[in-house]
Image (cartoon, rainbow, N blue to C red; front, top):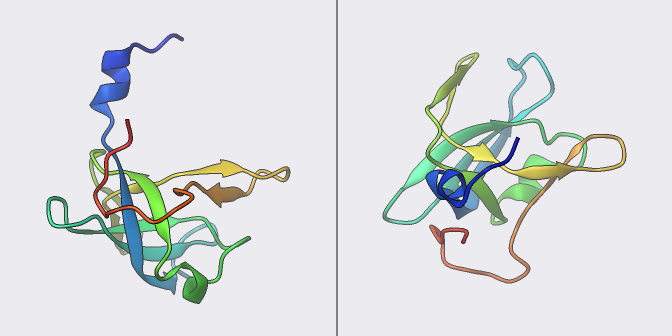
Length: 111
């Protein structure tokens, strides 16, 4: 399937900083519950992310991440996931987070 530039522009991909990260034992697959600050325009959003293989909750706090912020919220157990934190698979298929290589303002849009 081929995507157009208009398709890409419909996705709102933003940088945010993880301000809280906690284990999410109610999830079917091992996951963490994140609260991510996307700056004053978007605010703080919650996300459920299957990141337990490479990340401990305390190591994620203060880390910048890239996320889709305009998908509709999804209810995952007791958590309302309001953004999709993005990663790419390692050789075993486990997610590795995408992030800028230097600090940038929260809410910055990918272009």
